[in-house]
Length: 129
Image (cartoon, rainbow, N blue to C red; front, side, top):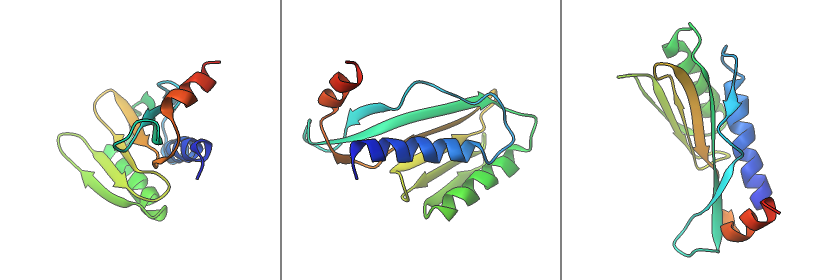
């Protein structure tokens, strides 16, 4: 898997997840951010990405279960925490890990891509021209 494929899989998985629930106004924190993973800088990278929306007046438990079921369909291992707010955590599948929070105020999905060969510093230089 290339760095672009890892980044795209993360963004696509998060944005497809958001489309499963009835919330409007989703927006990204920023473009997916590259970082080093593993013990040696410059050898392996992963991406982090966050996507949020104002929480709708929906059943938060039902929305958490929709996300959990979708992530299970992607082959992910899923855990749902019910208190103090519904939060869904998942690992595996097309990404390293994801979380979906229904905390008061906003819905928020964030995650980390799989680790792939690459140099985060070089990628940042290319991305910033």
